Structures are given as structure tokens and as C-alpha cells.
Amino acid sequence: MINNYPVFRKSAEFLGAICGGLLITLPAIPQAVAQQSTPRVNPCPSIFYEEPHNSRVVVPQGCPPNALTQRLAAQGLLPVPATPSPEQARLGVGGEESPVPSQPGAIPPSPVPPTQGQVPPTSPQPGAIPPSQGQVPPTSPQPGATVPVQPAQTPNITIALTNSRVDIKLVNDTAANVTYQVIGDTAPRLLRGKSSVTLQRLTVPVSVTFQREDGGQLTVTPQTSSEAGTLEVTFNETADASQGRSALRIEQNGSVFFN
Image 1 (cartoon, rainbow, N blue to C red):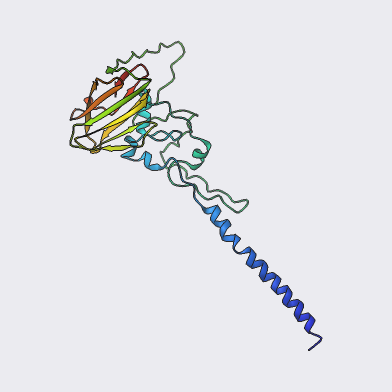
Image 2 (image 1 turned 45 degrees about the horizontal axis):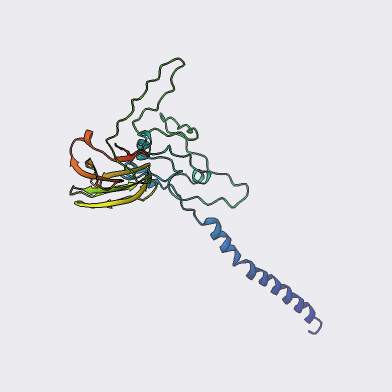
């Protein structure tokens, strides 16, 4: 009994060392797993490319353009959308970043092959604007062909600016709510029926988009104010789609265009 005591003592010390190492290691495992599985917020969520946002909301700079962003850029009311950053390209449109496989040598899932009769999409060139639905992409002119020159657009009205700044008063004379947005300055905001709002000290050039919340058409009536650098725009209802307007732009020379 006395001779076996040293052996029992060494076995107890060895077992205590193993248990202590496990207690130190276990708290670190959940923390490492939590860090690997924490999702990253996507700056270009898929809601920007779904109706009604696809035709009402301008996407942030760096995101792939949706239908409204493409249309305004084609009309000269927006700068050409920038190429998505590597971080945004890695995240993709919609959802959150998928956790990176933690096991070395893991094989990523293969892409789903296109269904029969479906042509796989081609990768766009850097900086290229993808055509919207129903729009035929422009073709490059043949060598020696004459390229038609677009006539200069006549401004709807011209105002005097004050230190390259302008105040825009929006007057909603309809009974419907109107959503408006100062591109690159504000998020989409709501202007209720029979109300008005003044956007102060906007730096030109500036673009403002607007649309009835119920999807109807709007006409715009511009009017200069007695105060320099102030433009008043009144919204009215119309059933004629050809008279409908959804954006305005003010250039550095005070020219005002409606589209």
C-alpha cells in the first residue's frame, strides 16, 4: 500500500494537467467559430433590384446600377456608375457574405449549369453599364460609318445662382404622396399630398428624382422666385404618360432640365 502511493500521485498529477489544458482551450473554440461565421452586411442588397425600388431608388455609388440608375445616367442626370469595389464584388448583390470554409483543401460548390435553351450570361467589361430589361445594347459603329450627332437639349428654364448654390422648393399639389431624393445628398424622402418642402443650399450641378407613391404620372411646373438662386417646382397629376416627369437637373450655368 505504501509502495504504490508515488505511482498514484504521479497519475493524479498527469490527469490534472490534461483537464486543465482542456479548460483553457474550450473557451477559445466558440469565439473562433463565432468570428468565422459572423456575416458581413452587403452594401448592395437585392431589394435595390426588385420592384418598386428597381424603378424608384438610385443605388449607392459602387453598386451595380438598377433600372432607374441606368435610365438617369443615360439621360445625363447622373455620373456614369463606378465599377463595384473588390469588396462589393466579393459580396455580390443581395444577402450577406458566406462564411469562408475553415477546413483546408475544401472544394467550393460548382456553379449551377444553365437550363436547356438558356444562354449563360457573359461577364461585363469593367465600367460597362448593363442594359435594362427590354433595352437593346448599343453596337459599335462600323469603320467609316457616319455617327449621328445628338442635338443639344434646350433647358426648360434658367435661373440665377448664388455662389453655385440653389434652393429648390417642391410643392405637391396632388392628393398622392410623392417620394423624392437628392442624388448623392439625401436618402429617399416622402412629401405628402397638398404639402411642400424646401431643399436649401444645394451645390450645382444637382439632380433630384421624384415619383408618385401610387405609381401615377406627375407633371412639373417650374417657376423662378424673387429671391436669387431659388427654384419652385409644382407637381400635378396627369394620365398622359408622355407628359410624365420623374427627375430634374440643374447645371452650373443655371440651366434646368426635366425628364
